[in-house]
Structures are given as structure tokens and as C-alpha cells.
Length: 124
Image (spheres, rainbow, N blue to C red):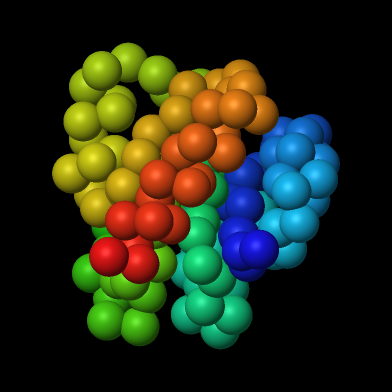
């Protein structure tokens, strides 16, 4: 279905998200930090990015902002998936250019709903 980049510094979190998504025929790319996420996004042009916030080097808010402002990646929807789940975090993530925000741990249903919503918005 979609090529999805998961940017998270936790191998466990990547594994859990990857398992959920591969069951629904999505192809997965992974990045361990914000810098790597930007590099992969520019090179592979995924359909969507799932972005953690707390990561080494470049955090998810910074990476989302850079992706949103870059003409090569601005069209790629970013959904932030983070344990930082306060309303201020959500608002800040959306201000950086994210199309959605999910608190960890995510359920498979909420993750798929958010992905489908973001992808359908992108096709409009």
C-alpha cells in the first residue's frame, strides 16, 4: 500500500510499529534520529513519515519543521508518534508541520486511522 518511514530511536518501538503496518501491506523504512529521517525522506520519498519526538541529534519537532520547509519533502505528511502527549506538545507538533499527532502507546486501529486520514488528505 504505502511506503512509510518510521523515525524512532527505540528498536522496540520500531519493531512494534513495523509489525502493525506490515500486516496491512505497508512497506517500511526506518531511521534512528531526525537527521537520518531527513536524509532518507529526501532520498526515498516515502508516502508518509511516523516521527518520534525524543531522539538524539535532531529531535522530531526539529526534523518535522525541516521536512515541512524543504521543497523536496514538504509534500510528505508527518504524523508524530510520541510519549510527549500533552496538549502543548500536540499543538507545537502541528505548528511544525505535522498532519497528525498520536500519543504512545498507539493502538493499531488509531494508527491506521491516522495514516489513512493523512494519506487521503494528501491525495486531495
